[in-house]
Length: 451
Ligand code: SAH
Ligand code: SF4
Ligand code: F3S
Image (cartoon, rainbow, N blue to C red; front, side, top):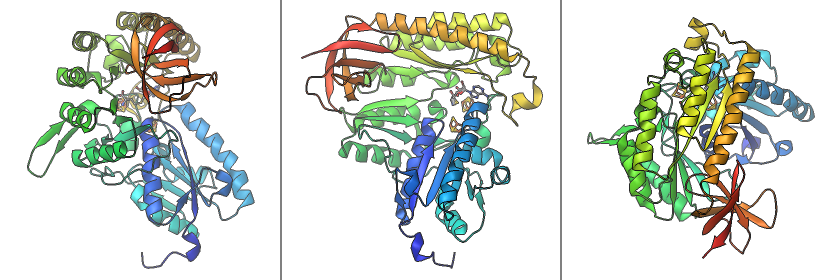
């Protein structure tokens, strides 16, 4: 672009609000990095902002409804400051494109997940009074060399994206449409980002992708790096750095990954393995490409190779065709695995997905609600059982800060990703301490420090 931006653009303050998954959290950090390099500054105060960006999620209808509500709130800021620029970025921007501007007149910028490098140009267009839209998806973009500006306040834990997009086409899911084809980021840039985080005092990184087990990067020499190799490389950066990763697709969880987890004390003993359903016929409708038996075989591999591993999952209640029998299969799968925790959802039909196009959303809402409640109640019992088994054990805990409940207590997580609360004794966020578990709730382990 030939026109130089007006002097006022320099130093314009950007406020960014993030909805959705961890990948969106990390994308917002990439966005701030891109904009800072162009002379914009970041603010935590929406009232100070010249530019408001909302990084959005489309995964379920209620996620989008929340964002529509928020956009209505933002009108008031625009009333107070006519020059305010409002941008919608992320998955909802990608899904709705120009329709968003038509429906909500205050929106000036629409940018999909692969067009964040274009944001400076889009902002300039908006500053000049134009409507700025870029929702092109890319086969290559991984923002590989961009060093995210960490917006999280703790300075201890950080997300590192290792891939983008998803090729799985689960029939209910909007992600392949909003994030495009799967692509893996160059491992060199991943490892140098991790090294930089360690140098800055970070103690934990979570490697992110929709399906990390299919990470696959071929370098210029033709050498292929797969996920188990990447995990080992990440763990080698520093023994004082914890490595987590999310999410694993059951169809691709190999024993090689489990051996890497077993071999490195700093690779956390926790696996998030979304089952979605315990019924083979529902799994087939969902196009998950595994059976209940395959899933349970992966669970026994985890229990055999990494016995101390905590297992968590995602479950959907009331997907198309789900019968009472199918629902019971989900409950029995939960019991059989003994999940430490779960994210549990009511099926929400997403326009354009295979399910929306070819299946009837035929489970009535009250039935979905009742099944979800049963799933949640069972999970609460399972979480409590899982936590009770930890009473008497001693765990290494990475201290995150004061407990939310009481200032006399500190809290942090163990390797299994369980929250541990214990009486404060002079430890600082970022310290590793040993805590013996003496009690628990279904959500938290309670204990005392041992030397
Ligand atoms: N890539 C990850 C999950 C990404 S979305 C994976 O495959 O495991 C996070 C979770 O949202 C999914 O695991 C699923 O349980 C839920 N989800 C996705 N689409 C949904 C829909 N249409 N309705 C309800 N829940 C949905
Ligand atoms: Fe969606 Fe399935 Fe891809 Fe997960 S693996 S993001 S649920 S399509
Ligand atoms: Fe939502 Fe997009 Fe993540 S739809 S869950 S923000 S990938």
